[in-house]
Amino acid sequence: MVTISALCSDFTPNSENLSAIASICRRLDGIPLAIDLAATRVASLGLQQVAADLDDRLGVLTSGRRTALPRHQTLRATLDWSHELLSEPERLVMRRLAVFAGDFTAEAASVVTSDGGISAPDVVRSLANLVSKSLLSVEIGGAITYHRLHETTRAYALEKLAESGEFEQVAPRHAEYYRSLFERAEMELETVPTPAWLARYGRQLGQVRAALDWAFSPTGAAEVGVALTVAAVPLWVLLSLMEECRGRLERALSGPVESRAIVCGAWLRGLSDEGLLPRDVSRVDNRASDCGKSRRCGLSPASALGLV
Image (cartoon, rainbow, N blue to C red; front, side, top):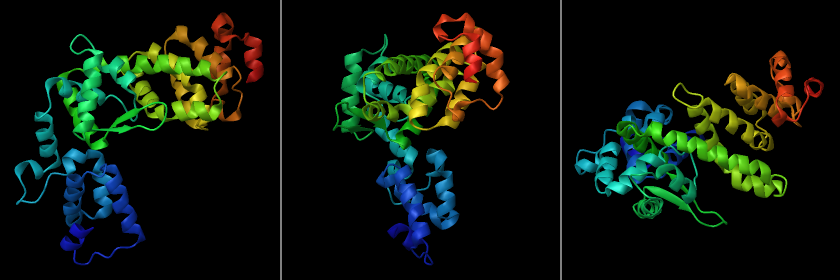
């Protein structure tokens, strides 16, 4: 706010612009240089426009103070400088971690980022090093330790991942990991209290969304997307995200023909909540016979139609 006041003589703090400033600081992960660069652009663009433009953090925050060191004049230059100081295993792990949309565990990072080029123990060591270099945050407090790439760092790492050509190697492993995780989570619902279940799996919603976006993309794996969609239904229901759940199920119905019975069964088996009924009930009605053909659904066509 000091920088904004120095550049904008008519700036007067009020509830509206203080809220916008707080939002900008949160979205920039509290990184001092990023906040300073954003502040210098307020004079020409205004608070609201700077906030709106932050989806392209690396492109927007490009004009620092001329008296600063070159590596401190733009956010990208600072990240380039930090990246150059990393070891090759740390660079590899950081860019591959960009596939995670939110919190992830060391186990998830090891499974998704390790391969013939880097071992799981090396991934764990790289995680610790990235935390010590403030490129990765860590939350220690509960039974499970979670890591997260700062959003600004993740935007940079996504660029590096695209440049490396490794995205199509890492994204399938990410989707497969969360498919397996939520298939296990679905079974835990019978023995784990709902609050404890949500405390563990609710924070993985971003990972589910990212995995499904890839799975149903032109280069994805629709069969993995269908399986993850079915396994994640309890997550959406317990979070009361009925509209999203319905949309994801409708998308899965457009997947492989051989998977439609599984989707139909997930939709209808014990999920007759009005919030989950499709906008076009005939779509499930037309698939009811498919449900009867699959023992995995546990429903006959008649019982399926009865639920609808």
